[in-house]
Length: 546
Image (cartoon, rainbow, N blue to C red; front, side, top):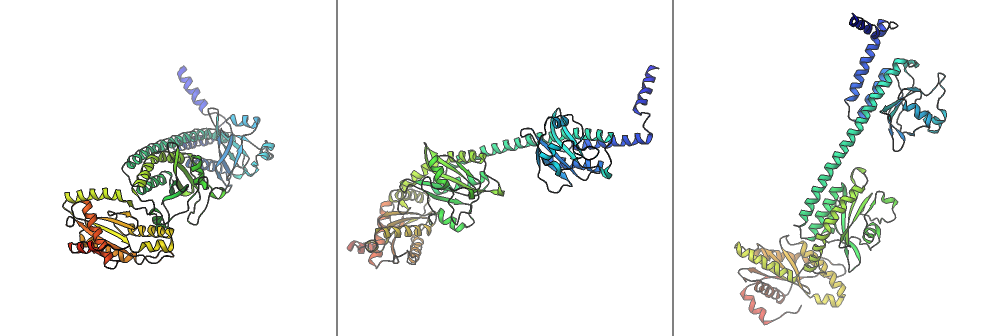
């Protein structure tokens, strides 16, 4: 019987006598609506979607046309507007209030900010924070375990009706759920960022490992620099970049490679040393400052930095510049410019660039030293000694696979007259221009060297005498058309010898090609001659002048 009474008593308490059946049904429906709304909020993990859904629930429930949702930043003690309705475009923040207002917020219950006559209850605070632009009828705090998560500000209810007790109950429950959901979103976003950062770190470490491994297999300085630059640009999501190396003789930083320029023809000419870009003294410009101080620099607004020296081909908005250091000596700098999508370079970009630069510095320095050892400082062509090594290697390969190779000796005609008439500086300028022309007009597999003075030698793999002769004729004809500023046209005489028909060792091949070249001189210069036994006697009788 007691159990029966208890049940009857419970049923009686669940349905208070002062509520009519109609009112009871309405409350039940509202509780069902509240439960559904809470479930909807708990299923959302994207902040913007959550804010919009929460605001939609409030608007639909109370017919409110103007509201603002703020989230609280405890470090800055600032509320930041994350969603608004009926307020137009508004970017708004305000500081937390004084003790009285803050204590009211911590009570975790909706509270009015105006009295029944519409007068503000916190006038000094609203005035100081310029909160008159916000709807200020009712504020509903979003609090979780004593921590303020956010704040909902609401204008008048539909029809300017007052908020009743159940409205306050609904708001208190839905804001409590919203606080939990916003906090969950924050944690989710934080873990997502941490995972993305970890994935990016692992990816970058893998990339740095690959870069370091790849560098060990690239011995050519230009190719090595181009590879390093491409990786630096990719890692930082930059649009373009350059690598500058220090020349101790001129005491200047020179651009050695470019990447990412729209003018690819200009870029290719710079990378092939056909065009010299502006060089920088230590301390001059951003690159010069980085070189001199050995410290990286980021400039995300070039227009506001006095160090930046602009040229017509720069088109730079932002730049990150990193020194390459070997044994405490700076050998050059890596520049990446214009972060994509309008973003700014970050400290993380600098750390990644430093890692690339640290890995790059030693192989670049070795490649530089090797380059200096095997190339002629004036023409940029290989030196004679290195050419002989390459020729010996190619002879062994040709013998192994029963193939042929040809050697072309070339000598500029009457070049002494240019030096005597126009001076040695003009002669050096001519040698540079002609060397660049010859290098550009042979195949990548061919090898060209400065043999001495104004004499050149070329190794043409997998080419018989006729093929080499065709190449020599083309070089001769095209060189005669080359114009060098303030100098007369320069012609060239060439001699061709082929392995194994003309010789089976490098000295014999060189000698036979040289004999054919002197035969070209004897025949009037500006000619290409193939070696044959018939020309040997003629060559022995007379030695031509240059």
